[in-house]
Length: 177
Ligand SMILES: [Zn+2]
Image (cartoon, rainbow, N blue to C red; front, side):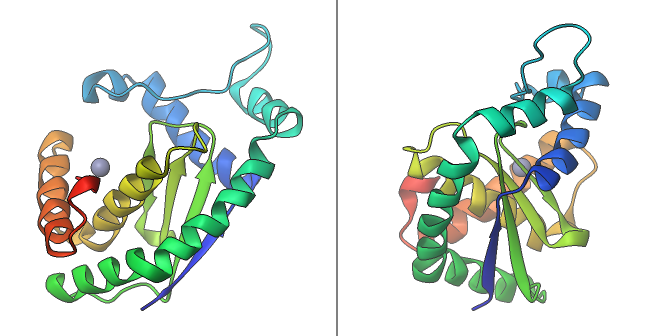
């Protein structure tokens, strides 16, 4: 089983925010039926990046996210890591030497960067365990099956959800479907 590294940092948040803003401005989220969480600008002169920084400094989000990181690590050792290992075996692919998981306050929900072995999970409710487990598993399926990626977004999500469903059933994790 491979290890997981949970990252809570403004840098990582800004990396993913760039992608979120790009997809937002070119109308992708509308097309995909997603409603991303964006930092709230205090006025028209503030950029999203500045608003994100301000949020990071003023809110308790980073502190709460660091606490949550321990929970996620625990679940990875118990369940998530085995899920990933088994899926990689099925797909005949190598797992990354470590899975990087960045927790972020913005974005559409989750995203993945195979070249960085990183997945991003948006956290808005620290009480909702079901949410992060589900997004983590979903993005790991994306990450490990990226060589089967379809060009069409909807088709690709359908493929990922089917893979995920099959594996969750096998692991007795039906509630995460
Ligand atoms: Zn997806």
